[in-house]
Length: 193
Image (cartoon, rainbow, N blue to C red; front, top):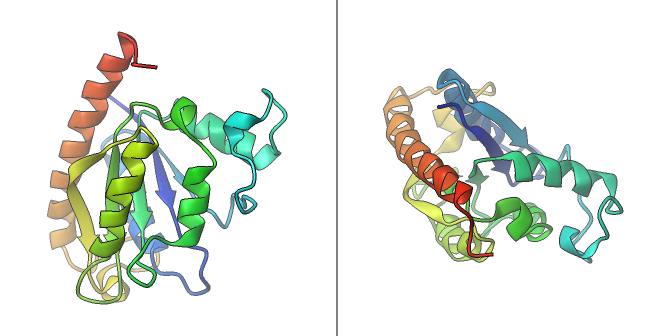
């Protein structure tokens, strides 16, 4: 069954490399016939968090927030693509996530694709995301999709330079789809709040 998936990318750095991983994930989702939209903080410039979307009267939030809220609310699940900045989550990603809450993210699964130019593949940032995502009511699936040496693993269009990433992505997305479909059915019966 086709799903609507928001792929949330988290870096605004000059010369950023994670867009390669984000494009790869979007392409893999489309191969599986899902609707996939990439949310890039460079294209959706949110202010530093002063007032989350939920505190605005309906229809009065800044246009960028309203646009993102509609995309997020429509999604059946989220794939977070995060680099590792000083062993942590990129600030643009945390800022984007913190603007929204249960109405947009509520009781939908997330999955973490992480990357770095080093050998750890961004897993230290992923461990921080494991604490943040459930607080936003979008628990992460058990499997990660870590990418080591991102600059050597994908080209600018998201094509893998190492074919093993296709097999790894298939396992990662199989698990994510299972959670997304299960939680979608469960939400039809209601949510705790």
